[in-house]
Image (cartoon, rainbow, N blue to C red; front, top):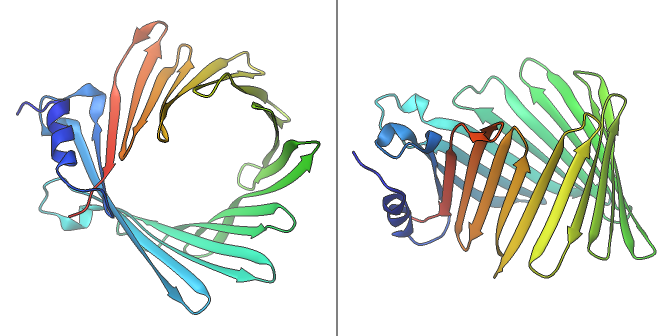
Length: 263
């Protein structure tokens, strides 16, 4: 079966944008038959119980199959509330239909102190913390300064991210005992932003973002000898293109096209 990009866009565009989101990934640029596609459907809803806001959702494959148990990719739920000046939320996600293990993320935010705390953990036979991080924001002389220490409990690795933003220029430094990187982001004009990154291993990457108006944009990121990544946002559409590199040769193409649709 011959399947073109235009055909994919036509199918998705035939539905109005609203709740469920349909995503089709095209593997290695293969448009020739259905085996090159990996379609998935995500859906979410929310409700309120007392002082607690509850959200929940599912992401499932929409491939033809006789095994319906293989369709769910993940099922998730999130509860949020306020406690003593802190906004607290907990999110749990199950992979597929295996409900014995859950990935858990806990966030706490104090707006008065400009402080956020994040904990990533797993729950199953027990509760195990994987990472802990905090973000502190400070305003100084018109500049926004952020300090973000992070600790990986599993690997016992720690680092800190320092960011500085003023007058269209952003500087971000990530430092650990073994590696460091610096990103300098500069807004060149109303439409263009460029952000080179250099790390202590000598690797360089460059990101360029072009604003297209009405919150639409195209962003290209070049990582020499690794990949070119392009993201194009156009109204309800988001397209991502990944081009792996071997030297100057492009070794493959991975395309993801997303649009929110209602049924």
